[in-house]
Amino acid sequence: MTGPVRWPRALRADTGPGRVVPPSGFTVRLTLLTAGAMAVLAVFALAASLAADRVADRWAEALARTATVRVAAPEGQLEAQVAAALEVLRTTPGVASARRLTQEEEQALLTPWLGPDLPLDALPMPALIEVTEAPGGIDAAGLSARLAGEAPGAVFDDHTRWRAPLVAAAARLRALGLIALALIGGATAAMVALATQAALAANARVIATLRLVGARDAWIARAFVRRFTLRAAAGALAGTAAGMAAVGVLPMGEVDGFLGDLAFQGAEWLWPLAIPPAAAVVAFAATRLAAFRVLGETR
Amino acid sequence: MIELKSVAYSYGGDAILEGVSLSLAPGSFHFLTGPSGAGKSTVLRLCYMELVPTSGNLSVFGKRAGDMTRDEIARARRRMGVVHQDCQFVDHLSVADNVALPLEVAGHDAGAQAGDLADLLAWVGLGARAQARPPELSGGERQRAALARAVIMSPEIVLADEPTGNVDWEMSLRLLKLLVELNRMGTSVLIATHDLALVRAAKAQVAARVLRIADRGVQLAGADL
Image 1: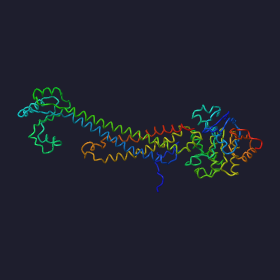
Image 2: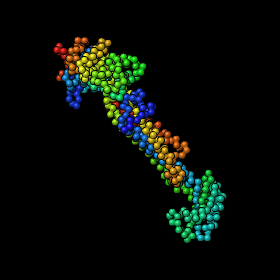
Image 3: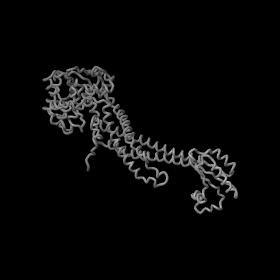
Image 4: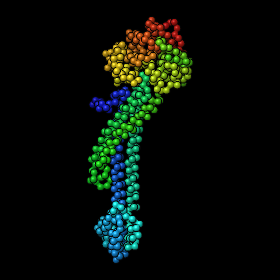
């Protein structure tokens, strides 16, 4: 059996009004654990939200910088129309480069749907030209008009219809992360308020004694607010450290896609440091509201 | 100082007090007697405004209690010293810290008044028990600590509910002597007790008015006391 936990002096709340609250109790431990667990979840939600942000930017940027010209023409005219389209692209402002995909590359694109043994030669396949845009962008309408004149089978696709839903999906992911953070904050506030109410009920005798000697509600509330705010901040600090450590050991860059981006990058590591002060502010407000409500019910 | 006019108090539909009129003037010494459950504690709790009269008028330090804000009630209590029936301490604080609580809640620097605190604890015979925790004290020591806490702010009135309820006769006389000394210094005293021997002992030392609770009302006690 171990002895009671010894808190650092700054967290002991044993100065001023705080010391009238009994130093231990399940409500204080509950606050500590709740704040810690919520901080871990907040770190994960923050990481997911920032990762969604990065993925959204990357998808948007990648799709925005590339475009495709698809050339579909009868047998015998395809090569001439491809050459004409490439010539149009070569002379179009805003086109950094244009390259026809090889047969192997086209096959690779179709493999996920049609399998690896696709006899591409036997199919009437359009030719695909990958276009990389210069930073100034391409006048899509002008290019489409020129292609229609020089290579009637060529269709310019600037990926707008692909990019929009991807960007929208990423924005929704980011919003979900923020909603999760708000819910975590609300749940923390509710738990701390409940713990405060339980602590006030458990310490009814202490409160009656303080009233007897002339303590104002604000003085009594301050005692509980200080205790619970410090404990919530301490729990959130520990939870944030644990959450950051967990995010830090994620296989960054070793996994493709969203999971590979989940770890914080660069200055993003500073964001989780806002969680303990935020938890303290939430706990302060929740404890104060709960304390005044409970104290107002009795004389 | 504290005045009750035709005050009634009911709890759960049962009348505890009816038509109680009582005036506690500065420097007065009152006993409130009656059997257990007669309503002595209720009168005291009305006086320090823990309870609200069902009807009638209660004024404390010249102001109607019903018109006071919560902060005003707290400030009025700082002008009173209350010895509660079961003493009521903060058990994890030392005796000295408990006695100094009224100073702390009033915003005074208890540390700066450490000398006065030590003198007060010595006055009630608890100088050597200053760092003990309340659960470590005997019944008599708890009563004396409660009395010390009640007077540390130099209150204008002391309200004591059965202050000798858990102590032997010798200790009862000692506590009574402390209250009489306070009264001689100008503090009003109201003691609720069912111990008539204590009342008789007090009347030999101080001009005390003895009130009796009977039939839910407060009357002046007869000459038999």
